[in-house]
Length: 393
Image (cartoon, rainbow, N blue to C red; front, side):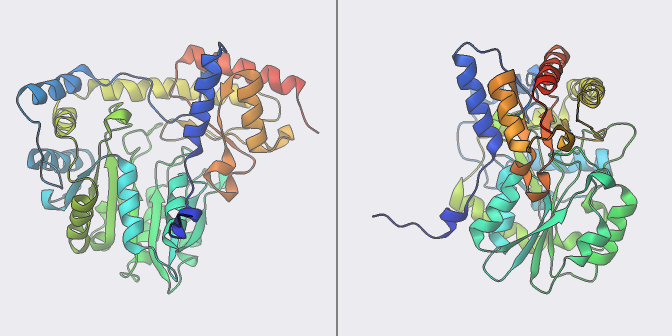
């Protein structure tokens, strides 16, 4: 019998893809399924980005690139960070990767081993905990609470640090909650982290350009006092509707960037060359399509929140970022994953049960409003009909 290392028995997955597969299977059977489960913009990649990739192929960009990515793209990342966030970065610290998950994988792999604590948001993106457990490190959940508008608490986070803590993972704007942590809270956290230069911080900022109601995005790279142990995660998938292109980037501190480069050499050699030229066009070309997409998400956000709060037994705080709503369904009497399954199988609406995002996800489901307003309204109507006739007391 083949025997793999113990870590593979601990590894989890992202259930959104399992829900997507089931939704597609039901649709193939002729069922009318509305998918509010998958975290993927329903927009096309802007044409100038597509054309840049085609041109790159025609121009002969068929070969290997540097493991960290082509220099013009890394320079464009730095220029974009400066223009958007007034953050200065060096192209030599930028690593282009095939999707944002890769940066999570590398960072957790670098710091995770038995005897080590790694802190991560709960509820949060499921790959955090999955990878932590894979390495044998102890996963320590940082509670993300509804009563705090799904922002993390600096005081609560700092209280969880131990001498064994080696990595802290933060995410704002957040998946699955849509929460944004305000500047004052981040500044408090930074002051606490100044005393722990031995702790690396992975700041997942993949939704950095999706904020609403005048809320600002605060990047951890703004803070010089902790910058030498911050890893920034961002990319193209959400902002430019490029999920299938598999394009992400990280800004690594000096002490870690060569380790990240070596992992790249050992694992994927380099990111697809034409895709890198598409990423360059995305950052340096017109931003109208990206802005229009966020404006449309904002309109849908209002429809989703109003509709959810009108459902029996459901309450929903207004998400401040990303494109997710995380309604509280406790008063329906349903367990979250059972409700998500029943909504898909019986009502034809795909959502994700909160426990797929962590222990504290019970009592919630996640809806993505990266779907048309018409479909969202139809889904809400179906959910209302289902809950009217399937209330559990």
